[in-house]
Image (cartoon, rainbow, N blue to C red):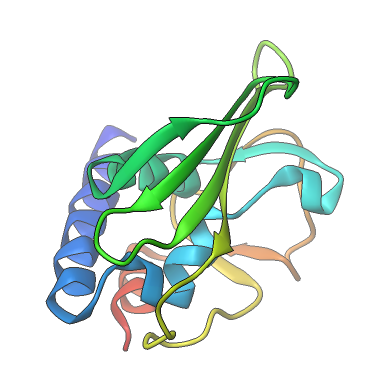
Length: 153
């Protein structure tokens, strides 16, 4: 299983190189799609490995500030260092086995240049948790298919 995570980590490193050769991650709809996967949107209880990893690997590209008090879990405002787009970052612990992390654009300052996001969302590492969305929302795919999806212009 660890090799699968290393493969995706290397792929996401390649994605950031690809994003910054053209603009930044903020211009790519499929980046937005993966970082914004949120179990709250489907009424389920899961976390997504790709979402967690891509958000974690995004940190060097953002200035991060604490959000307003009063939120459960952790709320932050992330600002892209290159284009100034802003995102709302949220983390919440649902249970001993499931926590949710998501990032959603609040203001995008660049025009989209990457391929549009599609549904069902292709995932290689997939989901972990108690209840999951139907395969009309997210579907398991091979590494090769996930790589093509993430790098396709």
